[in-house]
Length: 260
Picture 1 (cartoon, rainbow, N blue to C red):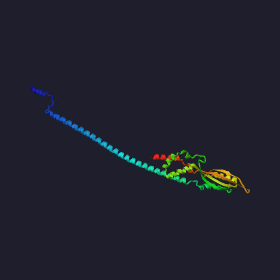
Picture 2 (cartoon, rainbow, N blue to C red; picture 1 turned 180 degrees about the vertical axis):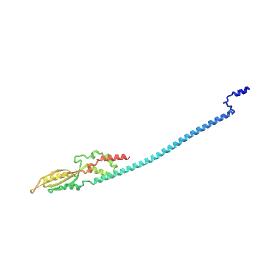
Picture 3 (cartoon, rainbow, N blue to C red; picture 1 turned 120 degrees about the vertical axis):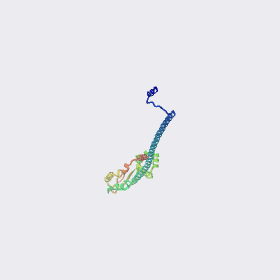
Picture 4 (cartoon, rainbow, N blue to C red; picture 1 turned 60 degrees about the vertical axis):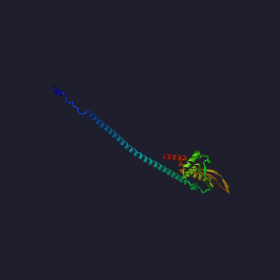
């Protein structure tokens, strides 16, 4: 009777474990093994995902690098083409300037026409001499001779084409000389002679007609006036507006730096 009462008052939630302890150890080991495998799989998944992401990023970067290399190659080719085109343009401009310098707007025929055109009947010309006079003989220093050193001339001439060298020689000749016309003749009316010289001064081609010598000669009752005059020729417009050789060299060097 007491035993029955003790069983009745026992805790109903209490369970009796009939399994051996080794089973519980194996069960705990299986659970820990499962979690270890799960953790390893998670780590492998994370590593694989990161590796795939890095691989995709590397592919994108390699693609961008290939595009940049192609663009760099194209830019280098375009720069070389541009440099070649600028060199051709410079050579063409040099040839054009050489042709312009050779085809002077003031040829000898225009100079002679400007002198003989207003010539009156009472004035006869016996000699017309067209010549170049150096700046040293006229007392004016040459702009290029005073500002250019021999080393600079040699360096620039080494870089120039034959047309450029010819053009430089002609420009140096133009800058260091002036064209003058010496005329000699006989006038039978002194006032007509002075009017003739005044008309020459009005010609845009001619400048500063100067009477160097005038004599009065009487022969058999006839009075004549042998005279000698000098006339300067106005530089052509292209020579007046042409920049100096130093300016041209600076422009060529700056264009070369832009091309590189």
